[in-house]
Length: 220
Image (cartoon, rainbow, N blue to C red; front, side, top):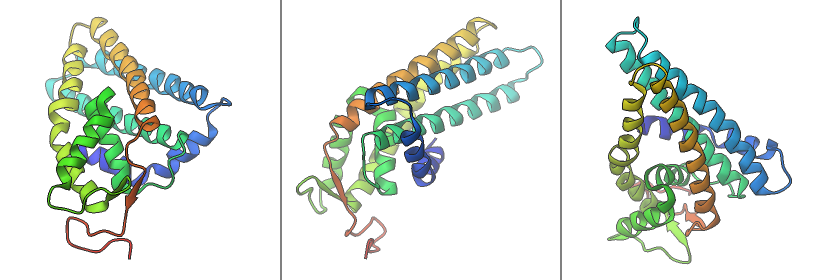
C-alpha cells in the first residue's frame, strides 16, 4: 500500500491536473460529482469482479490471495488519483511530492477527520524542529508527519479494506455484491471527505527551503 501511495504521489499529479481540467461541469461541485460517479462505477465493477472470482471453484487459495492483493493495490491507486484530482479541482498550486503524499495518507487514514489527523501529525512532528509559522510547514516537519501517518496506514485503512476482502469471499453472488457495493460506497465517501479536506486545508504552503530528514538541503 505504501509503495502504491508513493507511486501515485510521485508520478500522477500531472495526470490529476489534466483530469480535473477535463471534467464536465461549470462549477467545482459538478466536476467533483462527475469524477466521483465515474470512479465509483469503475471501482464498483472491479470489486464485484474480484468477489465473483474469489469464490470460483477453479480458483485456488494462492490465486485468490494474488487477486485480493491486486485489487487492493488497484483500489488504493485509483483512490489516490481521486484525492489528487479533487486537490487539483480545488486549485492547489504545484504541491511537492511530500505534500501530495500527506494529502493521500490523511484522507485514506482519517476519512472525515483528515484535517484533524493531518494537524495532529504535523503538531507531533514539530517537536524539536522548526515550528509552523504563518501556515507554512517546514519540509522536514511534513516528511516526519508522513512517517507518523504511514505507521497508521495498515491498522486503519488496511483493516477497513481487509473487512471488504473477507466479505468478497462469501458465496458467489453475495461476495460479488459486497465487493461491488463496498467499493462504490467507499469511493463516494472518499470523494466527500477529500472535498471537505481541501476546502478547509489548514496549511496553505510548504516551506521547501528546509532541511529534509536525511540532512540534505532542499530547494537550494
